[in-house]
Length: 195
Image (cartoon, rainbow, N blue to C red):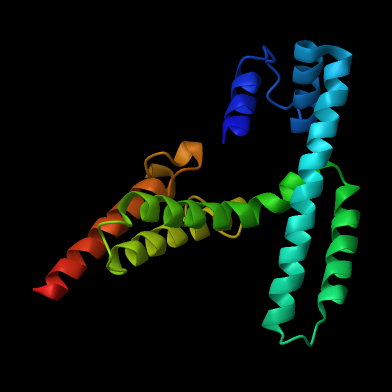
C-alpha cells in the first residue's frame, strides 16, 4: 500500500504535463530524475524481483486451483507450463499492453475483493450475520459488471444513464456508495427477519 501510495505521489509531483505518457515511461522518468542512472538499475532490479515473486505465486496458484478444479484431469505440470507460455507471450507486448489486457478483469474483481475485505475487517467482530455482507457484495458486483460492460463497449452511457450519476464514478469508485447501501439493506433485512 505504501509503495503504491508513494508511486502515486511521485507521479503527481513529477511535473509531467503530458496525460498520454505511458506508465513505463513515467516510471523511468521519475526514477532517472530522482535517483539518477544508478537508481535506474536499483529500480529495475526491485521491479524484476517483485514481478518474479508475483509471477511465481500466480502461476503456482493457477496450476493448483485448476488442477484441483478438474480433479487432476488437467495436471499441475501442464497448467503451469501453459500459464508460463501464455505469460511469456503476453510479456513481449510491454507493460502498457499487459495493463490494457488485465484491466477489465481486475476492474471487476478488485471492487468485490476490496468490499469483502474492508467490511469483514471493519464489521467482522460485531456483525456475524451474512446478510449485510451479501447485500454489499451484490451491490458491488452489479456496479462492477456495469463498469466493465461500459469499459468493453458492451453497454453505453445511454443504456445505463444512472452509472455516471453515481458518486465517485469519475474516480472508478462508483461501487462504494452502492456497497454501503447494500450493506445497510442487508443489515435491515436481517433485523426484520429476527423480529
